[in-house]
Amino acid sequence: MTDFTFNTTPSIRQSFGGAARLGELLENLPFAQDSRNALFVTDPGIVKLDLCAPALKSLRDRGFNVTLFDAVEPDPKATTVLAAVEIAKASNIACVIGFGGGSSMDVAKVIALLAASDQPIEAAYGVNQATGTRLPLVLVPTTAGTGSEVTAVSILTTGTEEKKGIVSPIILPDIALLDAKLTIGLPPHITAATGVDAMVHAIEAYTSKSPNNNPISKALALQALDLLGANIRTAVHDGSNIEARENMLLGSMLAGQAFANSPVAAVHALAYPIGSLFHVPHGLSNALVLAEVMRFNSSECATAYAELAPHVFPDIATNRSAEAICDDFIQQLIQLNVDLGLEKGLRQVGISDSNLDRLASDAMNQTRLLVNNPRAVTLQDARQIYKASL
Image (tube, rainbow, N blue to C red; front, side, top):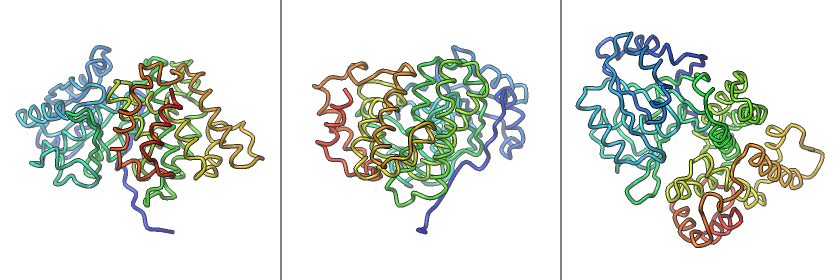
C-alpha cells in the first residue's frame, strides 16, 4: 500500500435542531473563557429566511457578542473575504462561525485564517501555501451538497472571474455541526443540485488519479453514494422527510471527507468557469457536465465506474462487462437529473456555441484539479465535453 495522509474535521456533531443550541456548544471551547466576540458569517438569503435566528439567539443568550457578516454572495469574491477580515480585526473577533452553504463556509474558513495572520491572501492560494494559525472555527451547513464543513479547501473568485483555491489542513474547522432541520425548507431545485454535487464529490474522489487516493476515501465515497442514491429523490420530492434530509446531510459530509483527501478532477475543473462566467450555482454546474466527463473518462476507469454504479442505482444489472455497466450508469445519471427537475443541458442556463472557447480556456487554468483526472484533458477535449453538454 502506498503512503497517504487523511485529514478531517476533528469534531463532527449530528443533532437535529442543534443549531438552536449553538451557544451551549461554543461556550465550552477554550477561546470562550477569554473572549466571547464571535463573527457570524452567512448570506442575505439565510438572514431573510430567518434560518439563522435560533442560532444567533442561542449565542447571545450564552453571552456571546455576535458581529453578523451577511454579505456572502454565490461564487464568493476575494474582496468579500478581505472586507470581512477587516471587520473581524476591528471587532477583536475570537471565533468565526460559518453558517450556510458552501460559499459562506468557504468564506468563514479564509476569514479565520487571515484574521489571525499577516499573510496576504494572494500568498495563500494553492496547495499548502497557507501559513500560521487561524481563529477557532465552527461550520454549520444548511445544504446537503458541498461538504465544506469537512474539507481543507476554500474556493474564491478573483478579480479576473477566475476561481482559485486555498487548500490547507489549517482551514479545517474545529467543529462541524450537522443539523438537518436547517435543510427542511430547501426548495426542490436547490436540494437536487446540491445533492448531485455531493454525488460528484464521491464519484471523483473514488476515481481520482491523485497520489493521495486512499482506502479511507474510497470507503467513504461508497458509503456516501449509498446514502445519496437512496435518498435524493425523496429529499427532492418530499422535502419534509426528516430521515431523507438527515441521510442526505450525512452523505454529503462523507463525500466531503472523501474528496478532501482524494481530490476532485475534471468535472469540477469544467464546472468552475460555468459558475464564474454565467453565475450558475456550483452544484448545477457539476450536474450539467458530469455525464460527458464520465463518458470521456470511461476509457480509463470503466471498471471503477462499474464498481460505483450499484451504490447509486442498486437495481442496475451487474452481470455484464464493466463497459456496459458504465454506459448504463451514465445514462441513469442523465435520467436522474431529469427526474430531479434539473436543467438538461448548458443551453438551458444561457450557454451557446460561441461561449465554448472561453469556457475551455478557463477550464484549462484549473491545473490543481485536472491533474487528478483519470484521463488527461486537452483544450480541445474540454471544448468537446462542453459541446456535448449543450
